[in-house]
Length: 515
Image (cartoon, rainbow, N blue to C red):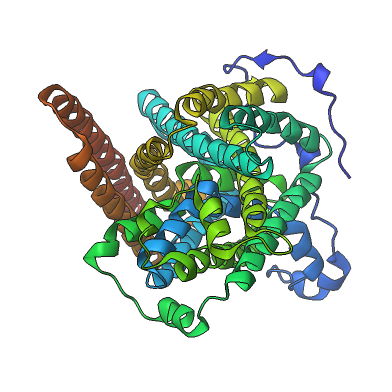
């Protein structure tokens, strides 16, 4: 069904002033949905309603949601899971469930924006905001992506070090992981569906590995159920609670999902076809995040069973978690250390590839640069790989320092969250952009409440972190200056949303009254 334009026929770079804009997918790359089960839909579709449910169409729409769910399973999330389990036991499982639900809401809005407009978030931000604001949003998105990518690459490198019995140090694992951008390009040449199949295998590998660990450690079923159903929070576990919520919504993932849904050919001239696409994407995204929740649940409960209440609970991190598991549960037929390493490698490799994917969409959308795929992937990859190699060389022998770096990277990503959420909610509420698919007042209120909650929670993380880390008059002055500019830009983004909404209502009233 897909006929790819030979890569060499495309210029290395097309000027952004050219009439032809950068798009997430060329028409030849998209998965065709039109014509599937059309004979069965003729009776009900002739009235203009949404065609009846089709398992075949659901299968064809399945893929973007699972690629999006990788961000819920990256090494940063796994580290948050294991620390929550070791320090808080089963008590934060309810929060993991609700945080995943909040993440699902945000990702469904991202998919809705992409399907209804036929464009992704970065492209729309470029058009809807002044050039200076668009450039700031691009820089923030790139910084968030770099922070996430460093964590993911380091996670992969740790897994390679585990599986090689320490023969390959962190820096060599980073270099090996850097090559995954070329694997990504190789797979992409065979079409979107082949790439999605590879991610399905990686998610399946994580599920099997962590389910195996879950079975080996035999967590308490009743305590697990109570942890999911009964909310508990104490001052001792507040930091882990904030980490659980903070890890769920990744700024680059909000941009990514709105682009991934462009991979299916949807007839935007027919309202029922857009509604149909939204229905199938909602189903597959929900299933994907249920799977991710279960995998995160496995990791949290394994460490809750093994290390909650022990002297080493506060010292467990991604780098030493495998060794602690080995000491606790021993070797066996297949040592748990290697099971952990396999699951971590699958998480790291899948998330680094989706990071490369997201970087291409973010750069192409904000800057409208039509680059050859290999060049765009190389640029995107270099942003993260070069600092990560430096990090690996410096921190290879220091677990404590690596944990501190991880905290700084979490803070970096937390800072960027408003710059993805606020534009998303602003754009998905605009009738001029979404048409009849703009969100209603109830959903809009819920979405803004979720966004406010996430921003406040991450704000707490930032205040807690900087209050303990920022020392000295000069450093405090610099941080205060950046904080003022940061808050001012957030106020600007929110004010644009409020101003535009008021303007839209006035225009609507004028149109209706004819004055």
